Image (cartoon, rainbow, N blue to C red; front, side, top):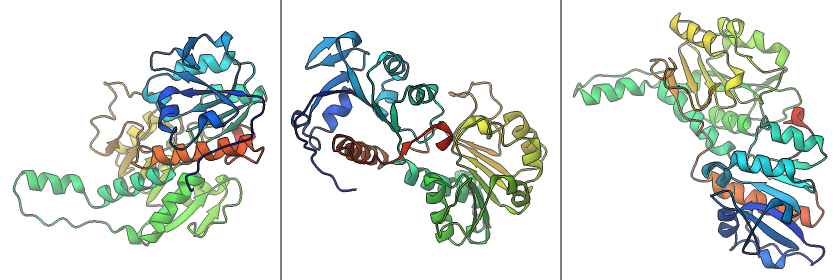
Length: 340
């Protein structure tokens, strides 16, 4: 997406709630003063600045909001959630999230607020998945152990090219994973409610056919939304249907997996490995057995954090802001949580 400086005809000025750090970062790309906008800048201490002066929410009329990565990096999620509940004039919110299970999104959609989301993290997530699966296939832990011990040993490994992947949730992240896996010779099956229509997916199935595909999958990737229908999707029955040599990857939401059932499967040798970027409770409690399990690769909900994710998020917001002000269709607008 090409970078452009946004300018728009002057009309009634709207107020945009935005992290102050994000507003400064985008100043070279967006001519804020040329837009019919006033910036309500959220500061790291939770205060609000309007035209450079500290204000309370009642002194503003927030119409638009961008929930950027800055909000979470500066630990302002609770603060902005409170502000959005009180912002009665809010018309449109753009978020860096792909999954919309944070309750504020459902509340805003119910109020008639337009919500658009991001898929800027999808390429980074795909690289994360491929890297960790290949590390398991190639037994990197044993390689590193041999090196530490100065032992010259051969290390045979599984080839990805002969593997069969089941992508549960063939949205943007799922498709990016599928493209990379297929490029390396894997067979890819996608699971989605609607039509997929992407050549990266060699075969597409509906969710009710999932039990018939699990027994043949070498890698099962969870990249679907967390909904009432998918909560605890990976239970004892799901895990019992998988190969003993299979790998489970979760880069979606921790609530998709019954962690007690997962630990039972791993301890009982009914699953080779679990790669978990998300857990039911985050941060994961220090006493969780997942931390030290020899067949679990655990990361702190950071599969999105590639070096290009922030720039792609900025570009997407800038483009959607241009579209909103020009009254054009928004990219990745949702009509409801079920659509996410």
